[in-house]
Length: 175
Image (cartoon, rainbow, N blue to C red):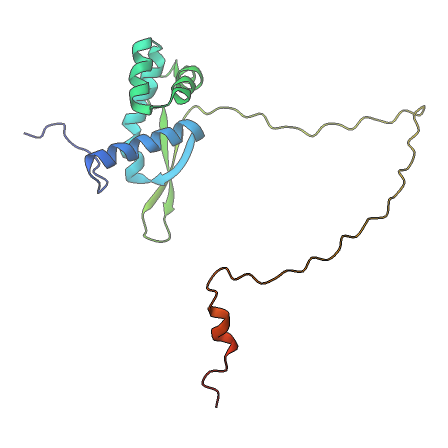
């Protein structure tokens, strides 16, 4: 019997499917939000949520299990030190899938696959200009005359389709 064997097949062999899901997982770890198809996002969601649950355990065994999946020490460190602590108070639902519409070429359903707890990025505000004190005087800068560079002669390169130039120079089939 095939109880609990449902998988999103993604029209791939099992090894290709696994590596596609791992690749999407790595991208989601790095960017915290990716644009993909609905079926790929649904296939990746439980896999990624298991990784975050591993990150919440924060044991050496959990780090080793995460490394066996991600194969990158920096990503494992990022998962355990930065991403998983955000979800300490949450029991599940670490990701969300938001529909974007259909892809133009083939009509596939596109979604935005992102973490529910995202890192807050502080915007850099422009620095305030210091007010000029009356004791300071600013002297105008002397304008220098720009020195002109000699003109470069650009030679046509043989490069892409060198014989094409010869074809168009000929007056072919002229009546």
